[in-house]
Length: 276
Image (cartoon, rainbow, N blue to C red; front, side, top):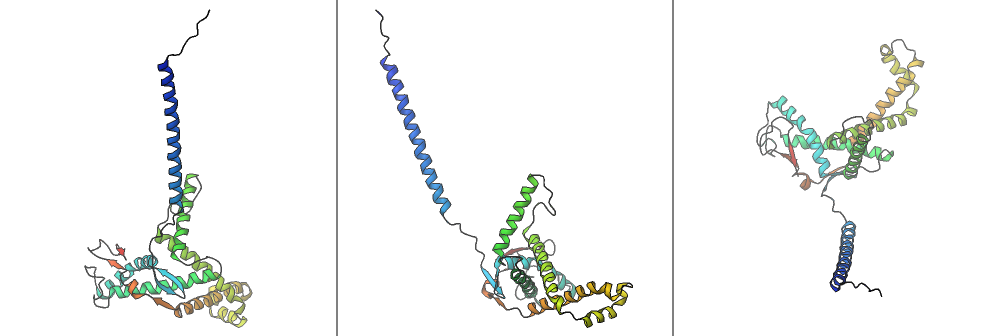
């Protein structure tokens, strides 16, 4: 008669304990994952707070933010250094950008140049917006475009594609590269609009006055080039008029703190840090 082999009680208890422990561990991991998912979802649904970049001016109702004002001001600072060196032999010094520096005032000159440049920029941007070259003129939209362009360049490098220009743009460089593209497009569009208004007498007079420049070309052969030159002049005059009549509203209390910071003398003209 065969004897049934009995399993020791200790072994049964040990196996049961391991099963319970495994079950508890699985439940614990599950609870942790659920809590983590809930926390992640809560965090992802919270709105991101955008960095503060207040509007400091409007030009023809187009906004100028503090960061955009600062960018243009920094671009113009070397011209102010050069102007005061040439006209007054004035070198940089601590207090150069104070409100009371004389003769004239470098800070006032810098603000004047910044304003003139921003008027020009916003006139071109508004014309580009009207013609569908850009959707918005805000600096926030420009920053998003800047980020997309640099991301595109990074991706292109990873896949071995050819890119033209630097591997990554700096903010100021890309701002003026983009502006140059808009200026060209706007001038071309305005010149094209102006062509039907150019009279035959204007074309003939231009040919007579500049005949030597056409190197023996007949009026018929030179007509296209003349029409392009005359329409371009019309476009330039129109843009100048738009700049001259632009409605500018500057929030002086917000703009005033935006100045070159000169706690110490810069190593060279234009080596400034800007603060709000």
